[in-house]
Length: 242
Image (tube, rainbow, N blue to C red; front, side, top):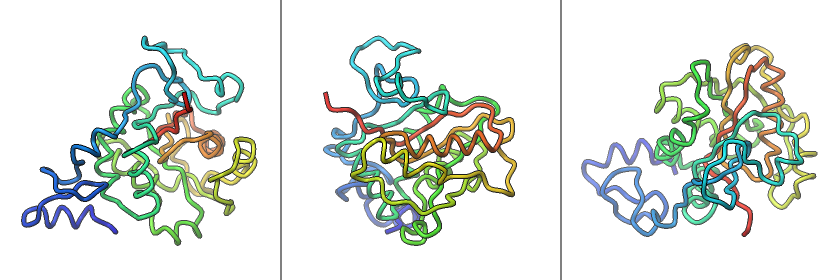
């Protein structure tokens, strides 16, 4: 259900509700106490390319996870706002599968904080595209919603159709790392009539990162479109089990 405009319109006469459990909260687009306590922000030592949390305390600019030591990432830096667990997982799933556009608005400040080191004067935000058939089924592209909300929050340019999905792919859930990369190979291309990325610093925006296969395919397409520097930003990052 789309609640961003509805909650704004009704907040004057009805109490605002928690984004996840619908308990009463003080301000619109907020979380109740229990849901907030289950929200884990990405912090401390993280991999500089994929933003996965790493053991250790002191931040290290060149820290890399085991995967990024052996996988060639076609981007230069990565960041994520939340850990994909608890409330973070609930928010991503509601945004992705229930067309909860109000969540994108609430997530904008979290994304902005994570994106800080990635932003340059030449930055343009580019969402990871959906295939038209999947977009028709879902009703909205969660990455477009996040990128648009972040663009408004930071007053940055964004190009929602700079990249396109040229092939419908199988759902990645349940696939291993190699299978995910094989599935996405060549599935994302630059839009043939857009030139918005030439010579620009691109931040690719997506809802969640697991293996990085989708962001790798999008990065390769952004390179083909002439991007100068590519970073990746996600609302949530799947963390490795300790």
